[in-house]
Amino acid sequence: MLFGTIGGGFTALAGLFGGGEGGGGGYTTIIMLVAMVAIFYFLMIRPESKKKKKLAEMRSSISHGDVITTIGGIMGKVVSVSDERIIIETSEDRVRIELAKWAISTSGRATEEPKN
Image 1 (cartoon, one colour):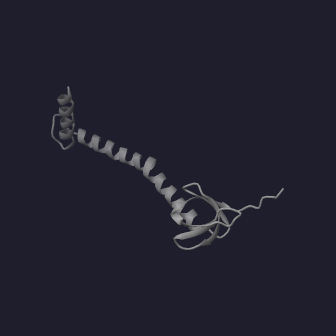
Image 2 (cartoon, one colour):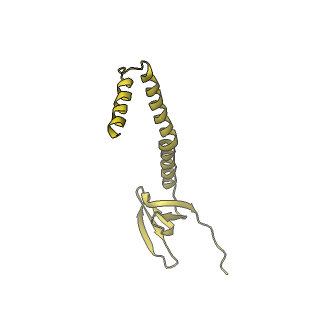
Image 3 (cartoon, one colour):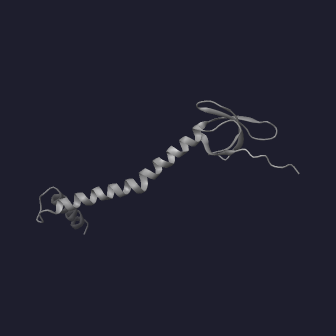
């Protein structure tokens, strides 16, 4: 059974390169392979590259006063920004942490909450 399946695969492969019994079937196989690669590109690769581009744009637009969340879940207010690093304050005690920009997951503007 296994060898019959492999043999059928070799027959299809031989038909792809012009050999075998059915002539002209190779073009259909090539077109199907190209179509599958195109579908794979538009459904998997292109959305991922758009997501990476959007994330890089968000990370480069971070400025003083933004509230961020890291990929580890640490939340804080941006105090200082450089090319590759940022410094955030995480609490009222002014605890400061230096982070790499690639570790930022989300960003937003700080809003003042009314004190009760």
